Image 1: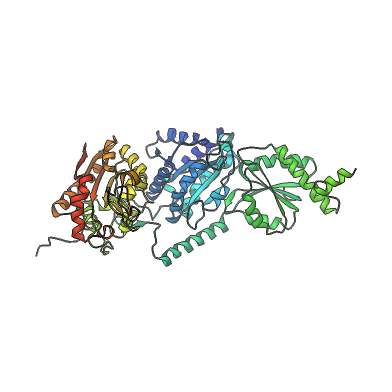
Image 2: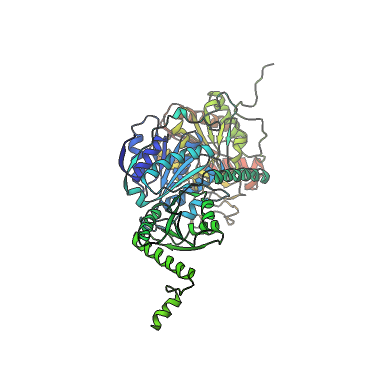
Length: 376
Length: 245
C-alpha cells in the first residue's frame, strides 16, 4: 500500500498536479495560497521539462496559461479571490477556444480586498462562469487533504477530456491545514491521449487556427450550442456528492469544502442529542449534484444550507428541491469560521421547530414561543 | 518563362479585407516572405491581436492563435516557454500593444522572451472606428479627441518602442514604415533581423512599423502616406532604436 505523508493542502495540490502531468505553472503572488506557487517553483526548477514563471499580473499569468495550453502542456495557475477576478478574462477565452487548464482559487473574504481569512465568497463567480459570455467552468470542491490530491488529478483529466477549464475551489484554511495523504502515482506523460488540435507549427499537416472570434452570428451560435451540448454531457456525467448519515435523516445540512467539515462535526453533536440529521456535501459545485438532493427532498423536513458567505449555494439547493421541502440558510461571511457547536445549535433549534410543527404543537422558538414564555 | 513574383507560401489564398491604402496587407506579405525565406513556416506559431489584424489568422498559412486584447506577449510567452524550438511572433496594433497590453509587452521584453513582435502603428484605433490611440499625435483629431489631442487634456503620445529599449531583455528594436518601396524593403530587412534575433536565442525583438490608415484619418491613400512621412515620423522617427544582437 502506498505510504501516507503529512502535508499541507497547497503542497498536496502542487505535488498531485505534478504527478498528474502538470508541466507548466504561471501565477502571481497573493495570500493565502503562496505556498502553492512556491512549491511549484521549487519542484519545477529541478525538472528539465517543466516551466514555472511568476508573471507580472494575474492577467498575464492566465494568458500565459492560454499559450501553454495551446502548445499542448498540462498547465495550472492558482490565486485567491481578488486575483481570480482578474483571471476571469482568460478563463472566458479558455472556455471559448475550448482549451484545457486547471485554475485554483483558494478563496478569501471579500468583496474588494476583503481579508485573507478562509471564506466561500466566490461560489457564484466560480459556478456561473465568472467571466463574460455564455459558458460554464467545471468546479471541484475538495474538503479533505486526500480529496485535494484526488481531485487535482481528476481536474487535469477532466480538463483534457472535455477541453474546458476546470476550477479547484478551496479556501485559505484548506490550503494551510496539514493532513495525512496518499499521493497519486505519477502519470506517464506519453500515456496521455494526444491532442490533435494543439499548435506547434504545421509540420506535415495543414496550419491550424485557434480563436474565439466568430463575427458571423450563426457561426457563434453554432459554437454556443456546441458548448451547451458539452455542458449537458458534463452535467450528466460528473456530478458527485458525499451522502453522510442520510438514510434515516429528518433534517439535512448541505455544505461543501471547509464548511462541510464543520458541518460534519455539528452533525455528530446533533446525533448525540438524538437528532436524525445527515450531511449532503457536493463535491462538484458545477455541475451541481442536484439529482440526489431532489430525490431526498420528498422524504425530509428541511435542508439547512451552511456556507461561509451570505448565501450563494443555497440558490442551487432551492432550484434542486423545487419547493418540495423547506430550505433555510445559515452563514458566516467575512472570514469568520464558526465552531461545530455553533452549527449544532442551529441544527437543534431547526429540528425542534420542525418537530413541534409536525406534532401540531406550539412553535416555541418563534414569535408564538416567545409570547408563551412571556405569559408564564 | 521564369516566375519572378508570386504569393508567399506562408500566405493563404484568402483575399485581404483591409481598406484600400491600409498598410496591413503589405506588412502581412513582408512577414510571410521572411517566414518563407528562413524556412520557418512549419515551426512558426503566430499570435494576432484584437484590432484590424484580428483576422490575420485567415491570411497567414501558419499555426495561429488569437490573443485577448493586449495579451499577445503573454500568450506568446506561454507558447514559447513550452516550445522553445519553435518561432513565435505576435502581430499587434498600437492600441493593443501600447495601451491595454503595455504591461504584458514591457515585462515580456524585460524577461528577454525569445519572441518577435510586429507592432503596426497607425496612430488610431482602427477597427473600432478611429478613436484616439496611445500613439495619436498632438493636435490629431479622432472621434474621441474631437478638438485634436491636447497634452494637458488627453496626454502625450507614447513612444513604446523607446520605452522597451530600456528593458534589459530587449535586444533588437527598429522603427520603419511602408510608405515607399525603399521603406518597404527596409521593413522587410528589419523583420528578417528580428526573426533571426529570436532564432539565435538572443532575446526579445520588435519591429514598429508606421502604417497609413486612410479610412480613419479621412484621407486619400496618397495623403495618408504623406502624413506618415511628414507628421508621424516627427514624433516617431524611423531608426534602429536598439541593436544589441
